[in-house]
Length: 142
Image (cartoon, rainbow, N blue to C red; front, side, top):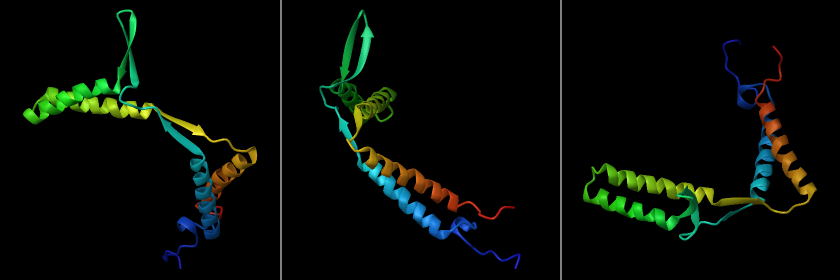
């Protein structure tokens, strides 16, 4: 019947359901293996310089501990007077600077692996994505 809404495949298209699940399985496995091969290191610490300022002919490092001073002052001002714009600006600005400093101090390294391992990971991830996306497409040409 023309008015009947029947699902014939993945995503309501005429693509194959088996192709959908095979692609999903391959894609998840490949991206899991890729993310598992990445190690994350951080060099963030209270004495570590996260910003560098150049002024008066020299370069000065701003450490994360120095950013805590305006944060503490801002928190004190906010607790003293909740409507203090200076307190909110100091607290939120320092918090944003700390978060940005932590994020910029993160280093990503890909672990050592053979070319075969890398090819298997990429074929699983990208090939699975291709199968997954092609199963959403209608196989019938209009």
